[in-house]
Image (cartoon, rainbow, N blue to C red):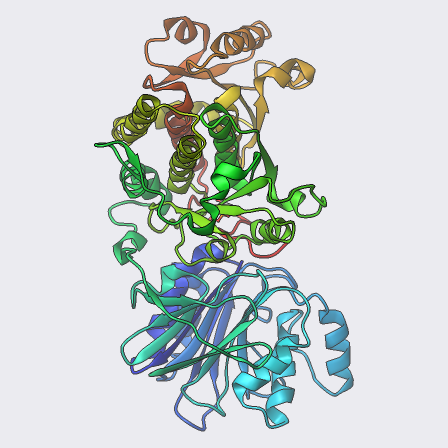
Length: 616
Ligand code: G6P
């Protein structure tokens, strides 16, 4: 979950590393650090501090860093050992012969630590990571070069890892390794310089030519050279790709927070995604990266959608699309549950994973389970080249641009648009949809960016409705049918941003328990919409009102009956029922945002969270 950045080349490394860490802070913000390798012969200079990058900047101000053209940096989400200066990365062995940063968990660290201590190694931190530095130190002392030492050290580790190291024995060199799914290592190709990072975000200001390390791969970079190898010692041939992502999308622009910017970017992100997957005139789908998965759309008997967090909620919307549009049996599963359940599936099941980062560990492990079962796979992903796109047989790309707010917004709506397109394509190849219906669905989806744009013109008016939640402790979010995933997502946004306890529930469950919570101090957000189940939600609202419960209803414009029934309402434009999730989530994103703002919460970096979860 941690962020990693490394630089070697002709420029000064320190400012590049510190800027990179700011770009990666969404990965974790418990502590941060850098190590710089001054010219040949001198020891690496390490600066690290508990807290956010600003604390590290302050610490560096006190002890200016030396000039150096090679260095590594890290922003941490603590796993082993509390967030402290000592536990912050980078870590060294006993001496300063090697410095490393790491993402992952050394599962056998207790045994390794005891073994290393038995050979006289003294430890400075409580981290599992430090064992890797001591292992590397031993291998360097035994005569291995840094790349070989990394390979040999990795052979001793269990668990998943991304590791980056430098050594004064090899000035100008940085080595990286990826084992398993603890997060990516992306290689950035510059002019007379090379970079490594956990994420594209830190590379894009410098280059768009990148390569992703595969599982069990190593890389060694210098200013003008890159070498890849397998962990088994074999040479690896990796061809970089040039991304079309815009580095400007990494800036906050005129906004106070990334999240507000990303909420406001949804019309453009949707338009780009829809434009990348279909044309309206003539109505034609162009899912060009389905690859080897394409023939399976016709053959499979069911679809299983997996994801985590917000992406799981998008997958739940996708289930509706596969059932309603393609008439294919569809299920969803939380990837972290699926992977351990010994699920029964094979080539008859199309597994569709949803992941904005393409690096979420549970999604990747679920995909490995699916692959071992022989199930064909498609991933819906916002990060070209990421691990889910490498494991899946085919990809449906979303074109939301970089998302930096820890709470996902624009990648939720674009994933839904991509799932809609995939369900249409599945229906088309299976002969389950007429040309007219296909054209209608394509037109309806293509109209959504403008509709969402109009909704966002009322950002401040929607935000005003959050005033009632400033002091509340609990909120219930209710939905049915295609609105259920939106209720779950609205509750997730509320709890992760504002720390208000929010529960999303299927409205039909109300009378089976949750209604016992209702009194005048327990507000409900009810998603009504105009889908076939609207009348059922009306009953739920009546029942809540009859028990003095307060209801904020999200209703279709002109639905006067519901507007009169609820204590307060937010309206969404009338759109086809299947596309209601795209419109209904907008006010809930704004409500959560405004509630968090009113409660003084850190919107882009909510406590305890990280944007990409790469450890279990
Ligand atoms: C974290 C993020 C969420 C995201 C989830 C899944 O929990 O905070 O915003 O929805 O991971 O991430 P993915 O990259 O797989 O979509």
